[in-house]
Image (cartoon, rainbow, N blue to C red; front, side):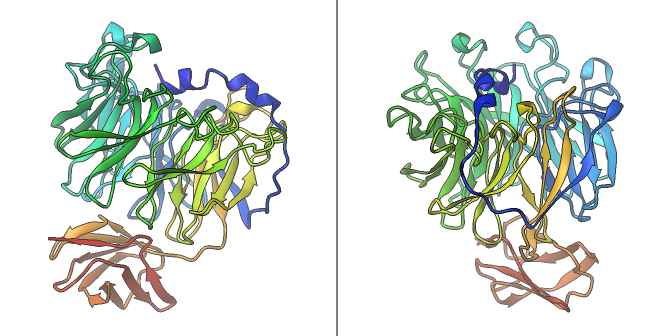
Length: 492
């Protein structure tokens, strides 16, 4: 069972939305690829930039066996299918990626999860497998690292993975775990948080609702991110003090703290049912979205690491027109201008979702409205900012109405560089991703020079130099100095 299936139970009302909020047009919006005909697919997950400068992603369906694909696409729209899920009997290699983009790991490979498939099939998993964790190379060789559904490891992983500073991967399963009491939601088990090594050894860190009915700690987690303090943060779609979802913190050792329960302010003006994870801003706070609450159409919120929540925006503030969008299903990203960008799934009668921008203080701007009257075609995934400054994303599609697409949005933001990983000790290896890096003349870590090798126009390899301290990584090229989108943390 997908969390989206029950979480979207009221989606029929969205077709009634109309518009008021003024919006500025995007600098440039281009659809670079459309999944059509036999290649039609639903696209639920976002994109990630590879070390070659191309973008990589997965789909929920489509491909040779309709189990979804792993693909590579150039910034100009040339798509290559790298792997077809369900290539093995009974979809032992996984089926249907839902929520959360691939991540580029420090070994240069991509890691992700499938909601279904794998080698474990039980009646609890609707006979289609309980999901997998996989690794896929840039060339398309896929290795299944773990199949869910045995013991307390969870069922139906969603929300993607994050690579921790310890080199392991962390993620969540929407159901399963050791607590078997969530039958009121049509599931068995309330979800779990897990850690998995690059070789596939999985440890369940936490199973939600261990105390029985009530589930004040939350139910149905939406993935995790690692905060700058080394702990992991995330949301649950349900549970908490009012059964409307939570924000939580969990240590690498598995100690969970519920930071906030939504619908704490009646009648849920602070939001309800977050269906996406969090992003940590440069100010140290966390930012996210809720699917409901606010004015009934979702919210954008900010929360401190100690649990002080501020509602930054409530969609459809006048309950009329809704030109600012409705029903955000995806997490936010912080762009190089310091502002946050996100997508909403719904809109007014003639729109099908939006792209929006919001500052840390709550100033809101509608960047783009997707012009389609069918609700099911809107974006469900987060944006990604490529190192050339442009945004890329996907729309879900609705067979019989409109096809899923991949799009590019140019807001005239400046190019930057990105480090993989974002932290490390003196002497540790670091990959720097960017554009036009071929003739780079200098790499510094917070002002400390580093030796480096230019691998290609989109990749530099280096090591953290002696004397480096936490701060911005800069690369000097003939056309200018490129700064990292996030500070690099030098660890002991």
